[in-house]
Image 1 (cartoon, rainbow, N blue to C red):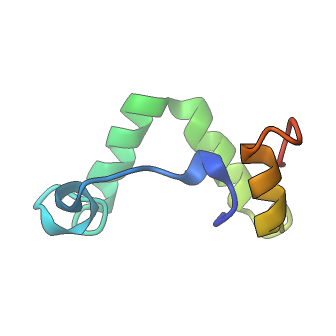
Image 2 (cartoon, one colour):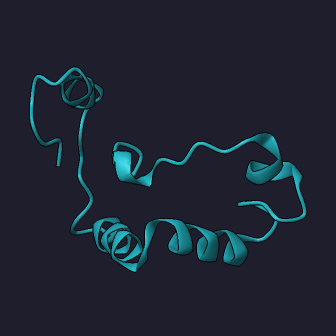
Length: 75
């Protein structure tokens, strides 16, 4: 999932690890927050993609090409 851009979330230190309500201290709370913000379809897509037979084995260069608009899809 490291190369899947849909799996990326920018967090401040409080919501990443330091706060009482953070991704590391309360993963279920964080999961609920992400579903509220991004939706069930987003979460189900990530769950599907995270299964061993569905994991995208991308490369750094392929992600860079996607970000630089050299290719339309990276998955």
